[in-house]
Every structure is written in C-alpha cells, then in structure tokens.
Image (tube, rainbow, N blue to C red):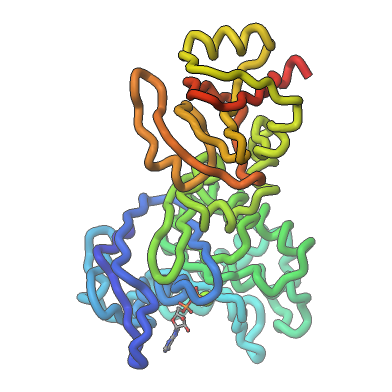
Length: 350
Ligand code: ADP
Ligand code: MG
C-alpha cells in the first residue's frame, strides 16, 4: 500500500531531515511514527502527499510513484489531519467536513449523507452540522478535523500529531473512538506522535525514528519485549517496560536476596544443581566488583545482548550492566571461575 525506497530529504540549509528511509506498509495497517522532536516525522509524512519533495529515493502508493502524480490530485486522494486543525471559521461544520468530497464533485445529496453519517460515528448530534467552528469545543473541533480527513473515504490517511493539543481526557476519548473507527473502516493510517502511550494504544506497528533514521519498526508488543537498543528502551521508559512485563526486574532487585558465594571452577550441571538446591530458577553471575559477567541465556534488555551468540543451546555473551538494567527472570548460567552467584527466587516461591 505504501512503500518508501531509500528516501532522503536534505533541506536547502544542508540539514538532512530524513536519511535513507525504507519501509513498506499494508492496506489497513495503523502505523505510528514516533521519535523526539526534530527527528524527521513531519518531513516523512509530508513527502507522502508531496507537500515536501524528497531529495533522493522513491515513494509508492499502491505501486504508483507519487512523483509521477499531479500533487493536487494526489492530495485529494489522501486524507490529512494536523495538530492545528485548520477548520475554516466562515464555513459550517457540514461545509468543513464536505470540503474534499466537494472538490471531488460528489453530488450534494451524497455529501450531506456522508457528513451526517460521520458525525454520528463520533457521537455528535446532527444539529452540529449547521454550527460554526467557534461554537464547538477544542475536542469537538479536532473530531471534525479527523472527520474531514475521512470524508472522501480515501484509503490512506496521514495524521500529524492530531491530538497533541488536546487535554488528556479529551485525547484519551478521541484515541479510543478513533481506533474503533479505523478498525471499522479499514483505512491505512500513518500517524505521527511523540507520545509513546498514544503509539502503544493505537498502532499495529510502531516506527521509532531518530535523527532521520528508523531505529526500530515493530508491533507494540515486540517493541516492549525487545527494544532494539538503549535509545528505544529509554524512549519507551522503564516504567512502561516493567508494566508491560510483570516478570521483569532490575538487576538491583534481583541482587536483593542474599548472595551465595561459590569458588572454584563450575560447570552447567553444578549450576543447575545449585539452582535446584536453592529452589531458584535463575542465577546471576557477579564478580567481586559487582560487575555481572558470565555465559547466560539471558534476556537482558541491553544493546550488548545483540552481540550474544548461541553455543550448545546457551546464549553466550559477556556483558556488563548497570544496576538499573532490566532483566527477565529466566536466566541460566554456566559458571565461571571465582565468581559469586546471586540466586533469583522464582516469583511463585516468593
Ligand atoms: P519532527 O516532525 O520529527 O519534529 P521535522 O520533520 O519537522 O521533525 O524536522 C526534521 C529536521 O529538519 C529538524 O531538524 C528540523 O529543524 C529540520 N527542518 C524541518 N523543516 C525544515 C525546513 N523547511 N528547512 C530547514 N530545516 C528544516
Ligand atoms: Mg513534526
């Protein structure tokens, strides 16, 4: 449905806002672009409807290169909502919603029916159709902004922080409403936000951007389970990671039970024995400097995990971690000489 092939954008001042972006989205997917301010989200979005021209690369919608389409025509084929709603103050709500259908020369009757149908979808009564924007609250105006983008029934909708200016309660309500609406209508939505909760709530897939590049593109679950690197982990925030996975603990929490010290060379069999004796299902290896080292099949959320490799079904990795690094509770250890083993009690035993 939507494909970027090595797309870059360098502004006239030499700033590379988007750097070699490639991705592909399916029809009906809800995609959230997220990243810190200035990472290139808006630039990416505006290249889709040619409000900005890429410096390099190609963008395809349903296999058609957008550069080969007439920009005005293209923009009529794509819904677009931004934070500054931009309802026309001198037009009624009906006229605002019907803007694109009118440009597309839909007959009057069809336009009226569509406006009424849409208003009903967001639980607003038909009498609003003849009101003017200033007679509506901020949340209601934003709803109308969203409806306007849906009005012509385009299969692709671009939304650039559409709920960013709303108070949290209105935003929550609109997010819920909008997600339901999208499920029903089957639109492909490209949604920009800098709010991780919003992305996690809405998206089928989340694209995390940094400095014009994609750091990770995955489902919300996968992103919570396997953040690609420290940046993503930090961006998600430890609280959300812990919340998403009740099994997760920090190293400090794991080290809380009193450590058992063992000296000498040890084998995996010894380790398993030790775990059984202590009725624990996981162990951490800690040397005297309190630096964790070992050969473990850990799922530590740490970029160094990526350097790990599988040896005899055991993920072999050597790593150092900070005390507040998050660790899943299933850790097996092949013992190393002269190290201290800190048992981790099974949650069920606690
Ligand atoms: P985001 O939407 O993620 O906040 P933008 O796409 O708006 O990011 O901007 C990406 C980068 O490009 C920023 O560093 C921004 O300052 C720069 N930028 C955006 N628009 C222009 C422009 N018209 N000219 C020069 N630089 C720009
Ligand atoms: Mg932006």
